[in-house]
Length: 175
Ligand code: IMP
Ligand code: MG
Image (cartoon, rainbow, N blue to C red; front, side, top):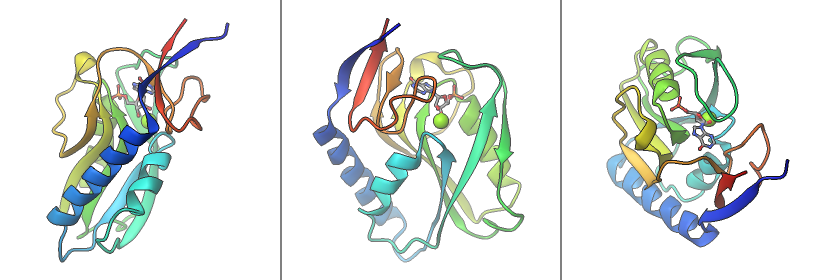
């Protein structure tokens, strides 16, 4: 059945969010050269926009992929890294993990734990969206584009059943 989309964050507002976060990162990473690690697939659009606003010289851009058991709009209780990084990739580096949306917190917690094992010099979390209403694991987020209310969102990298990632704005999805 076709779903209805309602615009939650228009394109111009996303652009403003991206510029603001890039400024925060530029301030905090002055004189450093961080490694950005995006979580596939959702974060690829945000990461691509963000890097083009950063003045900080980026040391490296990497991606990891996690899989949560279960599908659809309800996250399951576990996430595993299915595509990781060669050992030593982030060792001694200032790492910024880039996520599309922190919902229950399970995915980001697993991703942070995975990266920490490789002993980065520092590790921070930067998410486009924070949806704290369904949080099951406490996550400390360093950079947030916008906090959103309960409800499923799509667009700007985020999907429902792999669709809608291409939309330039962020929408809520309804039956
Ligand atoms: P968490 O593990 O529950 O925090 O969920 C994280 C992952 O679930 C994110 O990386 C998203 O890919 C996906 N997710 C959570 N909420 C939404 C949503 O509203 N729209 C699209 N994807 C979502
Ligand atoms: Mg994701």
